[in-house]
Image (cartoon, rainbow over all chains, first blue to last red; front, side):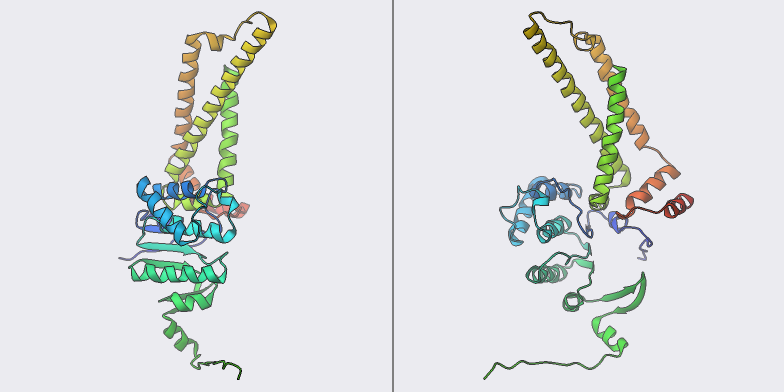
Length: 184
Length: 142
Protein backbone atom coordinates (compact mmCIF):
# COMPACT_ATOMS: atom_id res chain seq x y z
CA UNK A 1 0.00 0.00 0.00
CA UNK A 2 1.45 3.34 -0.98
CA UNK A 3 1.29 6.11 1.55
CA UNK A 4 2.81 9.52 1.92
CA UNK A 5 4.08 11.46 4.88
CA UNK A 6 2.88 15.06 5.05
CA UNK A 7 5.96 17.24 5.06
CA UNK A 8 6.82 20.84 5.75
CA UNK A 9 6.08 21.96 9.27
CA UNK A 10 3.58 19.23 10.03
CA UNK A 11 4.04 17.41 13.28
CA UNK A 12 3.95 13.66 12.95
CA UNK A 13 0.80 13.70 15.07
CA UNK A 14 -1.41 13.83 11.97
CA UNK A 15 0.29 10.79 10.50
CA UNK A 16 0.05 8.78 13.69
CA UNK A 17 -3.64 9.57 14.12
CA UNK A 18 -4.43 7.79 10.87
CA UNK A 19 -4.03 4.55 12.83
CA UNK A 20 -4.34 5.68 16.47
CA UNK A 21 -4.86 2.25 18.03
CA UNK A 22 -1.96 0.63 16.21
CA UNK A 23 0.56 3.43 16.53
CA UNK A 24 2.37 5.23 19.30
CA UNK A 25 3.97 8.66 19.20
CA UNK A 26 6.70 10.22 21.30
CA UNK A 27 6.95 13.97 20.72
CA UNK A 28 10.28 15.72 21.05
CA UNK A 29 10.60 17.49 24.43
CA UNK A 30 7.64 17.05 26.74
CA UNK A 31 4.18 15.97 25.79
CA UNK A 32 2.88 15.66 29.34
CA UNK A 33 0.88 17.92 31.64
CA UNK A 34 3.50 19.27 34.04
CA UNK A 35 1.06 19.42 36.97
CA UNK A 36 -0.40 15.93 36.46
CA UNK A 37 0.61 12.91 38.50
CA UNK A 38 2.68 10.22 36.81
CA UNK A 39 0.33 7.22 36.92
CA UNK A 40 -2.94 9.07 36.09
CA UNK A 41 -1.11 10.85 33.24
CA UNK A 42 -0.06 7.55 31.66
CA UNK A 43 -3.48 5.98 32.15
CA UNK A 44 -5.18 9.05 30.66
CA UNK A 45 -3.08 8.96 27.50
CA UNK A 46 -3.66 5.19 27.22
CA UNK A 47 -7.40 5.82 27.59
CA UNK A 48 -7.28 8.09 24.53
CA UNK A 49 -6.23 4.96 22.66
CA UNK A 50 -9.07 2.96 24.18
CA UNK A 51 -6.97 0.91 26.54
CA UNK A 52 -9.12 -0.29 29.46
CA UNK A 53 -8.36 1.42 32.75
CA UNK A 54 -7.56 -1.70 34.77
CA UNK A 55 -5.31 -3.04 32.03
CA UNK A 56 -3.63 0.35 31.60
CA UNK A 57 -2.93 0.51 35.34
CA UNK A 58 -1.50 -2.98 35.36
CA UNK A 59 0.78 -2.36 32.38
CA UNK A 60 1.80 1.11 33.58
CA UNK A 61 2.91 -0.28 36.96
CA UNK A 62 4.95 -2.99 35.25
CA UNK A 63 6.60 -0.41 32.96
CA UNK A 64 7.34 1.98 35.84
CA UNK A 65 8.94 -0.92 37.67
CA UNK A 66 11.08 -1.75 34.68
CA UNK A 67 12.19 1.86 34.30
CA UNK A 68 13.12 2.22 37.98
CA UNK A 69 10.21 4.55 38.62
CA UNK A 70 8.30 2.35 41.08
CA UNK A 71 7.20 4.50 43.99
CA UNK A 72 6.99 7.65 41.88
CA UNK A 73 3.41 6.95 40.70
CA UNK A 74 1.88 9.81 42.68
CA UNK A 75 4.62 12.35 42.01
CA UNK A 76 3.88 15.29 39.80
CA UNK A 77 5.41 15.07 36.34
CA UNK A 78 7.38 18.29 36.83
CA UNK A 79 8.92 16.86 40.02
CA UNK A 80 10.73 14.25 37.92
CA UNK A 81 14.10 14.78 36.30
CA UNK A 82 14.26 15.30 32.54
CA UNK A 83 15.33 11.71 31.98
CA UNK A 84 12.55 10.33 34.16
CA UNK A 85 9.99 12.50 32.38
CA UNK A 86 11.27 11.08 29.12
CA UNK A 87 10.72 7.58 30.53
CA UNK A 88 7.12 8.41 31.44
CA UNK A 89 6.61 9.82 27.96
CA UNK A 90 8.03 6.69 26.41
CA UNK A 91 5.79 4.47 28.54
CA UNK A 92 2.76 6.51 27.44
CA UNK A 93 3.74 6.06 23.80
CA UNK A 94 4.19 2.28 24.07
CA UNK A 95 1.64 1.18 26.69
CA UNK A 96 -1.02 0.15 24.17
CA UNK A 97 1.51 -2.06 22.36
CA UNK A 98 1.45 -0.30 19.01
CA UNK A 99 2.48 -2.01 15.79
CA UNK A 100 4.15 1.21 14.67
CA UNK A 101 6.03 3.43 17.12
CA UNK A 102 7.13 6.85 15.90
CA UNK A 103 9.62 8.30 18.33
CA UNK A 104 11.08 11.78 18.00
CA UNK A 105 14.48 11.89 19.71
CA UNK A 106 13.79 9.09 22.22
CA UNK A 107 17.32 9.23 23.64
CA UNK A 108 17.16 12.92 24.56
CA UNK A 109 17.66 13.55 28.26
CA UNK A 110 18.95 10.07 29.08
CA UNK A 111 22.29 9.30 30.66
CA UNK A 112 24.38 6.52 29.02
CA UNK A 113 22.98 3.84 31.35
CA UNK A 114 19.40 4.66 30.45
CA UNK A 115 20.27 5.14 26.78
CA UNK A 116 21.46 1.57 26.89
CA UNK A 117 18.29 0.45 28.68
CA UNK A 118 16.13 2.14 26.07
CA UNK A 119 18.08 0.88 23.07
CA UNK A 120 17.79 -2.67 24.41
CA UNK A 121 14.05 -2.07 24.76
CA UNK A 122 13.88 -1.02 21.09
CA UNK A 123 15.63 -4.25 20.17
CA UNK A 124 12.99 -6.21 22.09
CA UNK A 125 10.20 -4.29 20.39
CA UNK A 126 11.68 -5.05 16.99
CA UNK A 127 12.02 -8.74 17.83
CA UNK A 128 8.35 -8.72 18.90
CA UNK A 129 7.40 -7.39 15.46
CA UNK A 130 6.94 -3.70 16.25
CA UNK A 131 8.07 -1.25 13.62
CA UNK A 132 10.06 1.47 15.34
CA UNK A 133 10.67 4.70 13.43
CA UNK A 134 12.91 7.02 15.39
CA UNK A 135 14.97 10.12 14.88
CA UNK A 136 18.23 10.54 16.74
CA UNK A 137 21.56 12.31 16.68
CA UNK A 138 23.33 9.58 18.61
CA UNK A 139 24.80 7.75 15.65
CA UNK A 140 26.60 5.23 17.89
CA UNK A 141 23.25 4.05 19.27
CA UNK A 142 21.60 4.12 15.88
CA UNK A 143 24.37 1.94 14.47
CA UNK A 144 23.64 -0.72 17.04
CA UNK A 145 19.85 -0.84 16.88
CA UNK A 146 18.78 0.27 13.41
CA UNK A 147 18.00 -2.09 10.54
CA UNK A 148 17.64 0.82 8.19
CA UNK A 149 19.03 4.34 8.37
CA UNK A 150 17.97 7.50 6.57
CA UNK A 151 20.26 10.51 6.77
CA UNK A 152 18.50 13.80 6.15
CA UNK A 153 19.74 17.29 5.48
CA UNK A 154 17.12 20.07 5.43
CA UNK A 155 14.40 17.50 4.87
CA UNK A 156 16.09 15.83 1.91
CA UNK A 157 17.62 12.38 1.80
CA UNK A 158 21.41 12.38 1.79
CA UNK A 159 21.89 8.67 2.20
CA UNK A 160 19.69 5.76 3.06
CA UNK A 161 19.50 2.01 3.44
CA UNK A 162 21.06 -0.60 5.66
CA UNK A 163 24.18 0.31 7.55
CA UNK A 164 26.30 -1.90 5.28
CA UNK A 165 24.83 -0.26 2.18
CA UNK A 166 25.59 3.19 3.59
CA UNK A 167 29.15 2.17 4.42
CA UNK A 168 29.62 0.87 0.92
CA UNK A 169 28.07 3.96 -0.67
CA UNK A 170 30.12 6.38 1.40
CA UNK A 171 33.32 4.71 0.28
CA UNK A 172 34.45 4.19 3.85
CA UNK A 173 35.57 0.59 3.75
CA UNK A 174 38.49 0.56 6.11
CA UNK A 175 37.72 -0.65 9.59
CA UNK A 176 40.07 -0.01 12.49
CA UNK A 177 39.97 -2.24 15.51
CA UNK A 178 41.73 -1.06 18.64
CA UNK A 179 42.49 -3.52 21.42
CA UNK A 180 43.79 -2.29 24.72
CA UNK A 181 46.04 -4.62 26.61
CA UNK A 182 46.09 -4.67 30.36
CA UNK A 183 49.27 -3.15 31.82
CA UNK A 184 51.85 -5.78 32.56
CA UNK B 1 -27.92 37.77 35.99
CA UNK B 2 -26.78 39.24 32.68
CA UNK B 3 -23.64 40.35 34.45
CA UNK B 4 -22.98 36.79 35.59
CA UNK B 5 -23.50 35.49 32.04
CA UNK B 6 -21.20 38.09 30.47
CA UNK B 7 -18.65 37.47 33.20
CA UNK B 8 -18.73 33.70 32.69
CA UNK B 9 -18.45 33.95 28.90
CA UNK B 10 -15.44 36.27 29.09
CA UNK B 11 -13.81 34.40 31.95
CA UNK B 12 -14.44 31.14 30.04
CA UNK B 13 -12.89 32.48 26.85
CA UNK B 14 -9.89 33.67 28.86
CA UNK B 15 -9.46 30.31 30.53
CA UNK B 16 -9.87 28.53 27.18
CA UNK B 17 -7.12 30.58 25.53
CA UNK B 18 -4.76 30.22 28.49
CA UNK B 19 -5.30 26.46 28.56
CA UNK B 20 -4.83 26.05 24.81
CA UNK B 21 -1.68 28.16 24.53
CA UNK B 22 -0.22 26.54 27.65
CA UNK B 23 -0.89 23.05 26.37
CA UNK B 24 0.44 23.94 22.94
CA UNK B 25 3.76 25.28 24.23
CA UNK B 26 4.15 22.27 26.54
CA UNK B 27 3.52 20.17 23.44
CA UNK B 28 0.90 18.09 25.20
CA UNK B 29 -1.38 18.88 22.28
CA UNK B 30 0.94 16.95 20.01
CA UNK B 31 0.66 13.85 22.17
CA UNK B 32 -3.11 14.17 22.37
CA UNK B 33 -3.93 14.88 18.73
CA UNK B 34 -1.87 11.84 17.82
CA UNK B 35 -4.81 9.91 19.31
CA UNK B 36 -7.91 12.05 18.74
CA UNK B 37 -9.06 14.39 15.95
CA UNK B 38 -8.72 18.18 16.27
CA UNK B 39 -12.53 18.33 16.34
CA UNK B 40 -12.75 16.01 19.37
CA UNK B 41 -9.89 17.93 20.95
CA UNK B 42 -11.54 21.36 20.71
CA UNK B 43 -14.96 19.94 21.68
CA UNK B 44 -13.43 18.51 24.84
CA UNK B 45 -11.64 21.77 25.59
CA UNK B 46 -14.84 23.80 25.21
CA UNK B 47 -16.97 21.37 27.21
CA UNK B 48 -14.37 21.15 29.97
CA UNK B 49 -13.92 24.92 30.15
CA UNK B 50 -17.71 25.48 30.19
CA UNK B 51 -18.18 23.04 33.06
CA UNK B 52 -15.23 24.57 34.89
CA UNK B 53 -16.70 28.08 34.61
CA UNK B 54 -20.12 26.74 35.61
CA UNK B 55 -18.64 25.11 38.71
CA UNK B 56 -16.82 28.35 39.44
CA UNK B 57 -20.08 30.32 39.19
CA UNK B 58 -21.91 27.86 41.44
CA UNK B 59 -19.23 27.96 44.12
CA UNK B 60 -19.13 31.75 43.84
CA UNK B 61 -22.92 31.89 44.34
CA UNK B 62 -22.74 29.58 47.35
CA UNK B 63 -20.00 31.75 48.81
CA UNK B 64 -22.17 34.81 48.27
CA UNK B 65 -25.14 33.19 50.03
CA UNK B 66 -22.99 32.19 53.00
CA UNK B 67 -21.60 35.72 53.18
CA UNK B 68 -25.14 37.10 53.24
CA UNK B 69 -26.18 34.67 56.00
CA UNK B 70 -23.11 35.44 58.14
CA UNK B 71 -23.72 39.13 57.66
CA UNK B 72 -27.36 38.58 58.67
CA UNK B 73 -26.42 36.71 61.86
CA UNK B 74 -23.88 39.33 62.87
CA UNK B 75 -26.29 42.12 62.08
CA UNK B 76 -29.16 40.53 64.00
CA UNK B 77 -31.60 40.44 61.09
CA UNK B 78 -31.46 38.45 57.86
CA UNK B 79 -31.03 40.83 54.96
CA UNK B 80 -32.99 40.42 51.75
CA UNK B 81 -31.25 37.72 49.65
CA UNK B 82 -30.94 38.56 45.97
CA UNK B 83 -33.88 37.34 43.89
CA UNK B 84 -31.57 35.00 41.95
CA UNK B 85 -31.11 32.87 45.05
CA UNK B 86 -34.64 32.94 46.50
CA UNK B 87 -36.80 32.73 43.37
CA UNK B 88 -36.85 29.19 41.87
CA UNK B 89 -38.08 30.51 38.52
CA UNK B 90 -35.00 32.68 38.16
CA UNK B 91 -32.85 29.73 39.16
CA UNK B 92 -34.38 27.65 36.37
CA UNK B 93 -33.82 30.46 33.87
CA UNK B 94 -30.18 30.59 34.96
CA UNK B 95 -29.69 26.88 34.36
CA UNK B 96 -31.46 27.05 30.96
CA UNK B 97 -29.28 29.97 29.88
CA UNK B 98 -26.16 28.21 31.06
CA UNK B 99 -27.15 25.12 29.05
CA UNK B 100 -27.84 27.28 25.99
CA UNK B 101 -24.47 28.91 26.49
CA UNK B 102 -22.72 25.55 26.50
CA UNK B 103 -24.65 24.57 23.36
CA UNK B 104 -23.66 27.84 21.68
CA UNK B 105 -20.01 27.32 22.53
CA UNK B 106 -20.40 23.83 21.09
CA UNK B 107 -21.67 25.37 17.86
CA UNK B 108 -18.58 27.56 17.65
CA UNK B 109 -16.51 24.41 17.96
CA UNK B 110 -18.50 22.89 15.12
CA UNK B 111 -17.37 25.40 12.53
CA UNK B 112 -16.94 23.66 9.22
CA UNK B 113 -15.14 24.51 5.99
CA UNK B 114 -12.02 26.60 5.56
CA UNK B 115 -12.06 28.01 9.08
CA UNK B 116 -11.93 24.55 10.58
CA UNK B 117 -9.24 23.40 8.16
CA UNK B 118 -7.25 26.47 9.18
CA UNK B 119 -7.70 25.54 12.83
CA UNK B 120 -6.74 21.89 12.24
CA UNK B 121 -3.62 23.04 10.41
CA UNK B 122 -2.63 25.22 13.35
CA UNK B 123 -3.18 22.38 15.80
CA UNK B 124 -0.89 20.10 13.83
CA UNK B 125 1.91 22.63 13.78
CA UNK B 126 4.70 22.25 16.27
CA UNK B 127 5.05 24.48 19.32
CA UNK B 128 6.91 27.33 17.65
CA UNK B 129 5.04 30.54 16.98
CA UNK B 130 4.30 30.99 13.27
CA UNK B 131 5.43 34.14 11.49
CA UNK B 132 2.88 36.42 9.79
CA UNK B 133 4.03 35.08 6.43
CA UNK B 134 3.41 31.49 7.47
CA UNK B 135 -0.07 32.34 8.74
CA UNK B 136 -0.82 33.99 5.39
CA UNK B 137 0.37 30.91 3.54
CA UNK B 138 -1.84 28.61 5.68
CA UNK B 139 -4.82 30.88 5.02
CA UNK B 140 -4.15 30.73 1.28
CA UNK B 141 -3.69 26.96 1.31
CA UNK B 142 -6.87 26.27 3.26
